[in-house]
Length: 271
Image (cartoon, one colour):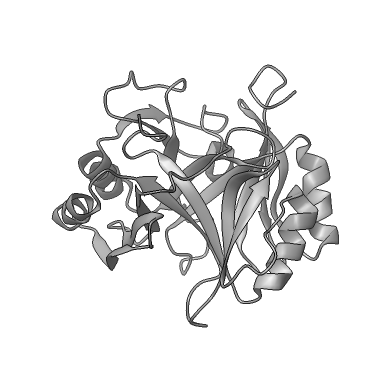
């Protein structure tokens, strides 16, 4: 069996101007380790398991940002569905050696995401545990078009949640409606959700583009936020409580934005 269901988030990486500085920041913040002699793409490990990667930007015009990849068993067909649904294929499917194949795309609102068709590499070897990926959500101004897009491309089933404190990790940041995504073939709801959609409101600058925000589980949200600042990062949204624990939105010392989530004690990975 494949390690990841079709359309599930299976990988994240961050594009950085200074790769070595990124290794120092995330090595200190999350305790990640990196292989000596890594080239422009450095795998990050936690307890010897793959959790993410850091990449040196090849073009200064590229955003300094975390990107998320969704699993597919047919990357060419997925790229075709993206176009049919009103999205854009930014980078055509290309082989990454024996590891697999990747592509980059944008939804109708402009949020960029990746596709990954596994070869020797499935994706995360650790997730939903401390200092590993646990959630992603897209922030958009075009929720109706974007909802239809992800349902058509990935087969996501949505569960609408309204108002501050709704059951998605990031709802309180926008304070408005939130839609959780569950994979095709599952019963939609919080127990099966693998990501979601939030809304960029008028409270944010008009020039803010649509984007994906990826979350990493941590043992102590407050401590992690403080540590990020000591390492030269910034706090975009101070720690606050939500139904799924306590979260904060942070920037690393080069400006890449990510979120951290401290699950409640009863949830997996909180021990």
